[in-house]
Amino acid sequence: MSTVVLTVGPQHTLREAARLMSDRRVGAAVVIDPDSPGPGIITERDLMESIGAGQDPAGEVVGNHLTASLVFAAPDWSLEEAAVAMVRGGFRHLVVTEGGDIAGILSVRDVVRCWTDDGAICEVPASAAAPTT
Image 1: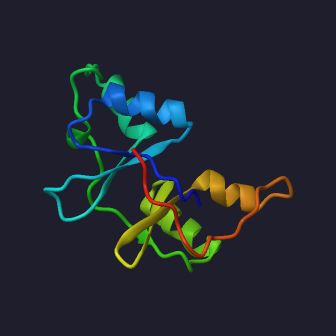
Image 2: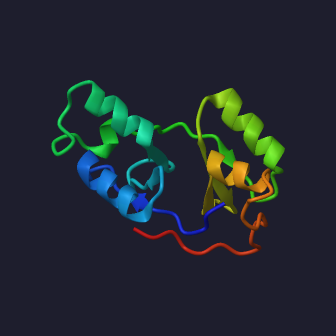
């Protein structure tokens, strides 16, 4: 999982979110809204659906396109548990929480890297870095 998590606010435009995601080379950003009970997520798919529907990414805001009801993973989940949750839920990113805080984000790409000979180091760090915007 990545412990450096891109965060955006619900009032960011889709264009701003897309630029930040592109700059960081990530497919999702965690949406932090102080007026909501928990975080949401905005993904490449959400951006694509909006643009495909003819909406203006400079005028549409993240808060109208995010997924608010997330499935959260714990740092001690196995890759198999994470993969099953992703397949069953039809999504490609899991927000990992520990003690109520965001510890990281796990993507399908992370899982695949771990399951291939050419993969990255696949250890979950004991402590996570703070999310960044």
